Amino acid sequence: MTTPRPTTTLWRPTGPAELALVRESQWRVWPPRLPEQPVFYPVLNEDYAIRIARDWNVKHDGAGFVTRFEVDAGFLRRYPVRQAGGSTILELWVPAEELDEFNAHIVGTIEVVHEFRPADLNIG
Image 1 (cartoon, rainbow, N blue to C red):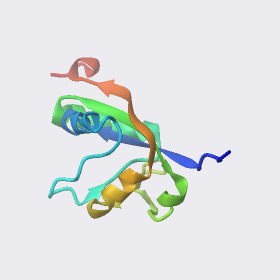
Image 2: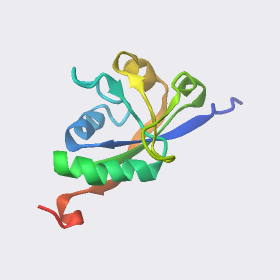
Image 3: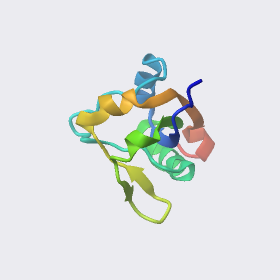
């Protein structure tokens, strides 16, 4: 009997266009970065992901989604945790050229855990 490898839960706030590409992958991988996106940054806590999806993605993309997924914990050690603000504003910065390898270490599928639209926020 094999023991499952340890995983780390990550969250990713995203807009509808990126989410559509994740759906096309059968919820298995993140799409390649655009030229103006040199870094893929999943976040380490759900609250931070909610704030980005609700406060940024809705305003800029018309909707915001929070996804949750598991990644091989041993693989993630190569990426230092970055504090992008307060003590709970924590991200991993994955260079775009390493995203295929990162995707290969996702365990299971990517799932949507929250959805925000302008009507939910009493805007526009």
